[in-house]
Amino acid sequence: MKFTAQFSVPRIDVSAYQKALDQHMTQAIAQALMVWLEAVLAEIPVWSGASRATFTKLASAISYSIPISPTVIDRTGTGQASGDGGMVMDKATGEYTFTYSTTLPWLIWNEYHNANVDPDPSLFYRVLKEGPYNFQVVGARAFLRFADNVDLPPVKPFVRGERVKF
Image 1 (tube, rainbow, N blue to C red):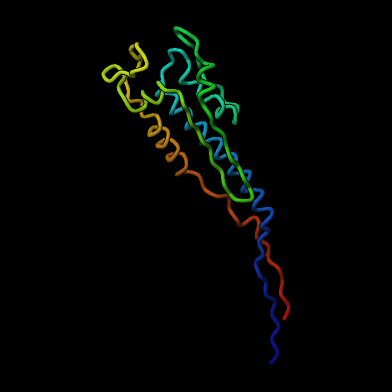
Image 2 (tube, rainbow, N blue to C red; image 1 turned 45 degrees about the horizontal axis):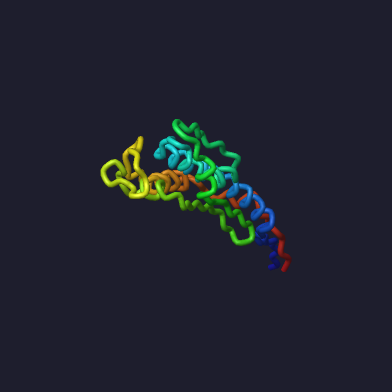
């Protein structure tokens, strides 16, 4: 008795999948940043504009416009100089992240203190919104809620059967 058979071995087009994955993750991290910014900025009131302006460098990475309308004195330049941030979107390493930091003293103080009860020693006015702001916690929660719904793109479209002869 003689049998013949054809077998197919699955082959993945890794390069094409990496390209699709990069596009997907680039969009996902940009959306995650927007969600994070919206949550964080909701916790930070506008008085001089400095605190919100610390986020402008990071927001520019996704062309996000931060609403800043100083109500008393315009210190947006001080805020912009005190904030830093950026995104990493590295297809080779699979790293898709964003970072934010600030050296703005009163934003840092208000993050952890109720400045109307425990005033910043370097300032002399009352704050519009009592702290602590806890914007880092609020931002982390918003990011995690968003990230919980991010899936990787399916692999199936990139799998091909390759015939193997015996």
